[in-house]
Length: 279
Image (cartoon, rainbow, N blue to C red):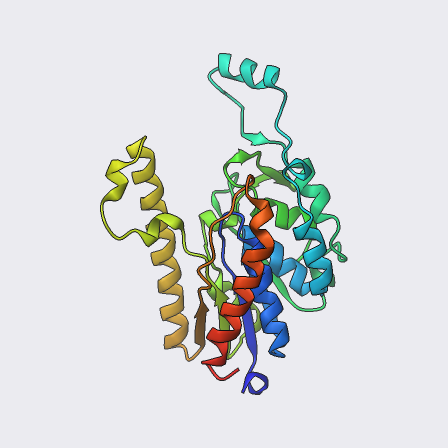
């Protein structure tokens, strides 16, 4: 059944979700699924690029499992941050410079998107022109770096004079964009839900800095609803959308040592979920 249709694969955004995405990728490869195209946003863009450039599972695990916070944690000196604070942070665009993140991405075997073995689409947020941007050609490293530049944490990435941040801000899982690119019969989405959307009650009112939590919840609801509308439209067009949620623990820069366990759980959950779909 897996080989009888044209399949696209989408990796959603999800803060430090690349370990779970990598486990998902290992599983679909084990099942013999050969996608006709990949797409991703934010952490999902990283794995979409690795998959499309045909990095092996061992190479991906070698990179991710050995990842240290110091590999990408490169803030400006405190003197510069304090100086920016005295100017009310005018012109200050983010805590991390992104040079470490860029060096990590340079380990991918392909330099340009159009040279990937499988069609690839990376989504990013274009701040300068205030729109969603879908990259299907150009620098692979810069496109993925732009898509993964979490606002305020990373400084925006400049490409051709425009400034970009996290693609997940405008499109959590670019299913429609991938459908337009490769015209698949089926799309498999590895979807990482935002943590605060798992709480269907008003417990956010009990959290510190409640207005910030209300804002974040509102943004995440908006992104999830937009994703659902994309899926509904594709299904109306006859495209089967299969969503896989592996429900792995959330990780962050201070819990990278849990990555291998998350990878293993995501792999097992994906194999189980897709086996029920006939793969």
